[in-house]
Length: 280
Image (cartoon, rainbow, N blue to C red):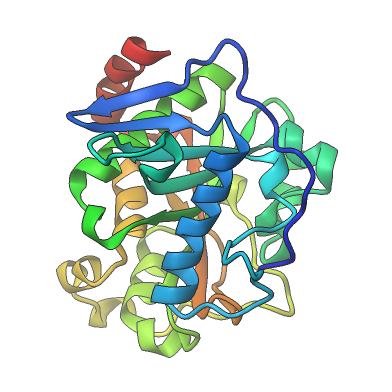
């Protein structure tokens, strides 16, 4: 859901985490360090979520997608440094990062409006949680390279902050779950969270995902039709929470991604760890 812009100053980058977290060619992934950069990320989100995908809500006259969580989040940004002009005009992709300690100090997680996140967090007090959200990239930059850069940045950030669990909502476009019956059922039958990690959608928002019998699903077809972001999470080892949720403001059907760092496939850990050593 989208709310009015919060003018509370955003936190600065942690002093011991360098701003550049990854680089491929002229592309860099960094953490936002100025208000101009955060506002540019909000403008990019508006272009993607509102102009391109038709989100509705209380977007501001400044044409920025901004809510009360932005001031307490870190903002991961992908820059194309070949674009002429000031740095904040080079932003082509963004991801929003909310650590559990900041969430506790500011009223909770964004996902808590859809899922019973607090029950999982309270059950694992020895782990640090990181909520991932507001992922978007300009159409002309939606490539494997951009995704690779974003994950370089996320992994470096996770290592710096000793993150144990990543989670967040990921979306199917449209508000009719039956339109995604194959994909939702495939997730339900094959990627549901184990009991010790399970999180259920709030009772008044719960939408069943078990819409097609397992024996009627062609896994290759289901995976091919999966949104790229969800497909990427699954390849890393992510699990899916209990139930989907309709987000009418954004015009999406959401599922909850749960990704304990301990479940990330070793080949990805080795790859991203090597990159993190270069920038952390």
